[in-house]
Amino acid sequence: MTDTQIIDLFFERSEQAIEELAKKHGAAVSRIAFNILGNPQDAEECVNDTWLGAWNAIPPSRPSPLRTFVCRIARNLATKKYHAGTAQKRNSQYDLALDELCEYIPDSDSVEDRCGARELAAAIDRFLDGLEPLDRFLFMRRYWYSDSLGELAKLSAMSYGAVSVRLHRVKEKLKNYLLREGLLV
Amino acid sequence: MKREIVSQALNLLDERHITQAAVFDPGAIHQLPERIVQMKTKRIISIALAAALILALGIAAYAAWSIHAARQRELKEDFRIEENQVSSYVEYALPDGQEDGLVLLSAVNDGQEQRAYVNISPVSEEEAAAFPDNARYIWRIEGTEIGGSAAPQLPVEMSLSGVEEIREAVRNYSYDKETQTLTLQCLMDVNFLKKAMKELGTESLPLRIDMIIGESEPRTFGPIAFRLTEEQSRYFDFGHAVYHDEELDRDMEIVGLELTPFSAVWKVNYEGAADFHKPGADQEAYGPWSQLEDKVCMEARIVFADGTEFSTGGALTTPFENGTVNQFCGWGSAIDIDAVERIVLGEQVLWQK
Image (tube, each protein chain N blue to C red):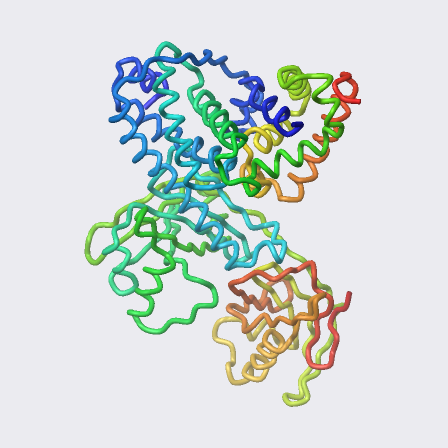
């Protein structure tokens, strides 16, 4: 079933919409939720909340692409749950990825003082625009989708070591970019 | 606080980047995706009913992903991939939306054989229990005559005897009742796959699995696209070392050893070797040479940096090719070919770091 047909089912308020959405995009959503929360029970709850979120949003929204839309809902819900302290912590890929990234954003005060999340996001977006497609893919999969380095090696058909080295270089570039942009001191 | 700001910033990244990274497609990675419409809230309708449905479907999608990840983890541990730094071992992601059928788990090329590990589902408990006496699994490359036997994947070190022991092991180690998934090993001759690539004019081979229970018609899983994976090997040149065996009173030249994490080819030569490996060769005259060939494979010791030793075991095939006898040996769990310090046969050091 195409995404358009699934969205039409949502507009008809047919419960089959959820069934088809889960069939088509369930694996991607489950993966994000599990990567962030690191615990099957929390992940399952998050996946269910995601379907509910989609049910509530469509209509009036007619999102395209549908996968990005549900993945974003899942990530927002999972990170909210994570930071609210209701999920099992310090074990997930999200933890590791966040720690890794924060290492390259060294001065914690300057982040808060000089920019908010929105400004930082805009700067990272601009930085990503200037990256090689493969580097951008690796960055997003690691820090947005919270995939493990092993999963990334599988996805990109590269060795674990090659992925690790490439990501290290991207983070160095990001650090320099943020310094140049005046977002870090 | 920094962690939260960074996390929030990531949540706010542009949809373009999220969509581009949803699938790895080197060709399409440059395409610009469509923008998505902002989410708005809407009154909940029929929540109770939808929630029950959601719960069941969420679990189904999660279960498919879960058995895929679990089997990959088990195989990787069983084959000792990480501890031996096997870079040629390839794992495949579960295709999005796929909950049954034929799914690739992992593959490794040992030089002679392309080993591929797959999940097939749905397979009922009765069908899984029909192996080994009443079920057969065959891998095939569609559009060619190329194919061979596949078998439920069992732990490498497991030693089994008798139909019932095998049946029980399949139930415990190869089959997952909850998702009705059976894990199989396909051993595919690399030369046959190359032949298939030539015949079909493509490197992407349509792999399928036929399951035949009793006298029934085959049930087909797949096809899915499969590509020959890269071989990881290291060659040890022994500088035409000559090994003298006192017991047999013969000399054999040991040319070198080609080692992969899962196999070895001992390259040896001796007077008349080419003739002994031709059809109809004098087996009586070949006897002592054959013993000496075995001795090289079975008694030579590969010594690793941590002091452990490994024997490649007896050869599975011994063709005479390119001026040497190529004794091919294979095993189940990987070795670290980069950690080899020394190769010895008896008192003779064939190679040293």
